[in-house]
Length: 310
View 1 (cartoon, one colour):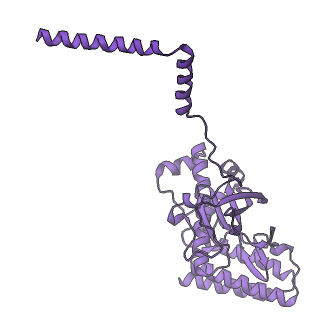
View 2 (cartoon, rainbow, N blue to C red):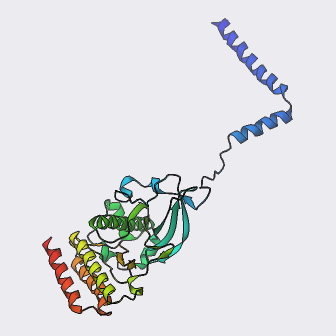
């Protein structure tokens, strides 16, 4: 056993000597050069993985299947993983969100589409004083989230922003499937909702309040407003803030916008009040331009009967 131990000792001594001998083979300059090469091989500095053009890679693949628009996807929706998003400016600012115009395009091809990107700003919810009226009847899945939102902590504000975005995306999806004239919801990721852009080229469609329809056009737009409201009530919803300022007219079609505050008529204690206010606010714009007031009253009566019959 002693002999074996001596052999191991001799081996270790020889290995240490060889290590010293190898160092003596190279000059200090050569050793420094080898060390520099080794550092370059393992340099883990910051890497720019952004797209060669555009402001960011498309976020389409970052959304889960249920966070994308209802199938079948329209032909204009760009799903290519190599697509990039371009920021083209601000379309609208609001109390709870800003809406941007973006273009999603596939470099080197003619595949491109303009879309509206609505981004919720949690810090601004402090200006939305009546948020509780709209969210009554909605419940947070986790009690921790609910308490944080009630106390308006930083975490709670972030959760609230996400819930506003999710509420709008869900409303757009359900109403689109029901046939209501709303923008097609492309996807949601966090507090950003991307939807169909309603307009021509890079110019957004005018709000109803900005239009000057003739008698025939006014009647057509009113008929469309009535049908949209009927379809919403059939789904159990009131818009909650419907007016001539969050509806737009594009090629004669009345499109309903801004749905984060959508109200469940039955779960919300003020659900029927919100429905009545929607009809009154939108109807007053039409009556100011020649529509007979009785048509507004008849619509409200019809919707109330329809809602109570569900």
